[in-house]
Length: 124
Image (cartoon, rainbow, N blue to C red; front, top):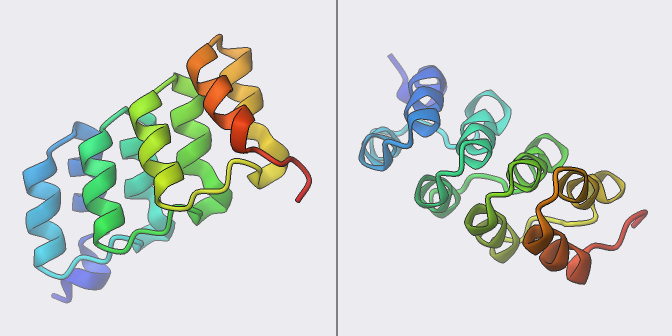
């Protein structure tokens, strides 16, 4: 079995559960952090697992995968720590017309709105 192409499901489950050590072991075994379109990063971001997000990004996960879904998910759920990690890694707050900002505002996450509003440039 080639873990780079076959380990995406396990990586997604570990990321979803917030199991940072398991994520690290899978990555060290050769699982591609961008497997299945980067869904592991997206679920870790959605579920607020900032350290898992940091590990995935450190292993080469694309912060802009799936048109910036990780940032949109973190913003929507108000996970400020994850939002900061993603922005530091180069996630584009203006992706998809600034939807991350809109989702944060819609869900009442004022701190996320302030941070994204300072860097978002919708339409570019």
